[in-house]
Image: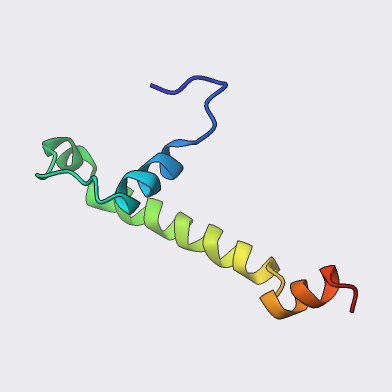
Length: 70
């Protein structure tokens, strides 16, 4: 359950759990309820969103030079 004042969104919680090695011990049958084409579409949209964000990202060295004043 997520409350409006929660610090993390679901993907952040999943990353946190995975980072601590707290992963499911078995496959959830609920995952089988997602149609293959819907899953492929969802992954395609995620890839597009990541690629779009990456295209706008400033290279790390450029960021450091900018914030360090030169």
